[in-house]
Image 1 (cartoon, rainbow, N blue to C red):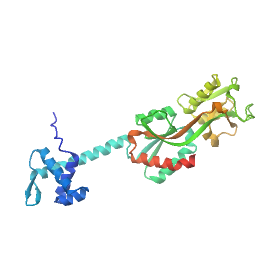
Image 2 (cartoon, helix red, strand yellow; image 1 turned 60 degrees about the vertical axis):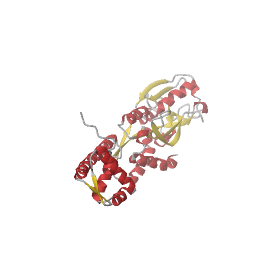
Image 3 (cartoon, rainbow, N blue to C red; image 1 turned 180 degrees about the vertical axis):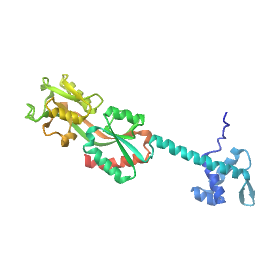
Length: 304
């Protein structure tokens, strides 16, 4: 069984011992550690108590280390160096303050939000390597909690006490139809009039799909979905090809195919969600995530 170390022997006290041994007196050790001389003296005395052997002797007003103190200081340097390397290794595995950050994103946010954030992030931390991981809201939230990504740009999760979030902008869902559709003449769409329409949609797990289902629940019928896809760009192309209508967030307006038109829905069917940055609360002091958070706060006005 590994022998137990007395609780009086701590890393901080070992650091104090090393500072005292290298500077030669209490005052200079205190200056190096940015503490009082009394604090240094107390730490050394406590360390001596925990060691249960004499580490120092007094000669007049001077405190002189014994050979035992020198032996302990030599071991302490190795211990503290090993521990520092262990801390760095553990942080690197967890992604904390590493030279790489993995950022998740919804496909639809790659149109404007992602480039805005990444450009600002590279300007702030040029040496930082950024990896982008795309997926649905459900996939990104799972990856975040598993630790396979460090942060994500997505629809902010509701009721997630373990997540820290920074809102960027709100977005509304619109009715998307092929140009020339019979619905194109309407200023606002009443979804209850679309019971005979064919629809295309995203697969489960996407926030856009959740809004799609909720809107038609409010309309009182189950839409006839003739095809599903796994990304929003394919969904827009299906509408452009006349396969069916759908609901799309307004943020994709700048990337719509020429043959697709967005029309607002009546207020009773309006689906609005907030998009932004999310990361685990346990990592809220990670320097890379703090930099990303600052970048998103600065980009909020531009994206709004």
